[in-house]
Length: 135
Image 1 (cartoon, rainbow, N blue to C red):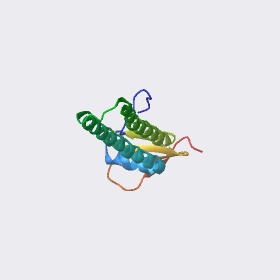
Image 2: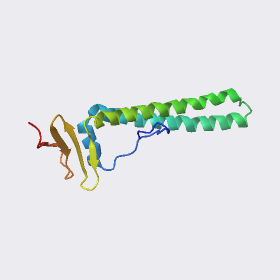
Image 3: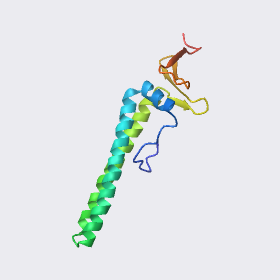
Image 4: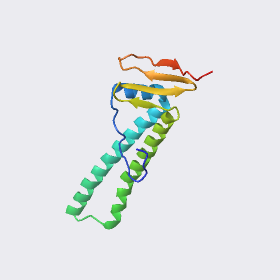
C-alpha cells in the first residue's frame, strides 16, 4: 500500500471487524479518508468500464477518434487520488503506531504513553494499559 509504483484503486479490505473498529477508534479521520478512498476508487473503476463500453460503441458507429483516448486519464486520476487518500489515512493511524495482530485478533495503538487495544471478544470499548516505562 505504501509503494507509489502501482496504483491501488480500492484499498484492501479489513482482515476482521476488530481491525476495522480498532482503526476507527484509533484514527477517526484516517478511517473517513480510507472510506473516501474506497468510494473514489470504485467510482474510478465504474468510469473506466463506462469508457470502455462508450469507446466500443463509438468504434462500431464509426464516431471514434483517437483524441477521445485522453478520457482514459480520468479513471487513472481517480486511482491516483484514491491511492493518495488511502496512504494519507493509513499514515494518520501509523503516527499512533496502529498495529493489527492477526492471531489474537486484536488491534493496538499508542496515545501518548498509553497503549490502547480493541479486544477480540467483541467488546465495544477500547481497553487501555499504561506502559511500564512511562513516568
